[in-house]
Length: 128
Image (tube, one colour):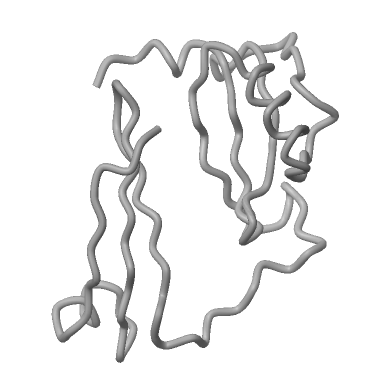
């Protein structure tokens, strides 16, 4: 993915959009060669957000993950291990019962604690 844009958003419209008084955000957009992009929001103000509990599990009601498609999740696993990024799964896992279309994948956490599935399978062949 590559950075495709960034902005500094604040003011009445942003406050109403996020329903957060005094919202001031730095937004960074990422795009891959195909498919939808991702926007990362960093709240510069207010700084009242609560961190994700470190013991969060996939069956917790507040659990959330971003699903990313890859033709080679094992290559991501190697890069993540080299950079000492936290892996939540034992590595790239083959999914025997692929009812949702994923054939294999792995779970990792970004520096803020957000979980991402890097998977291969049916969802990756969808045209946008």
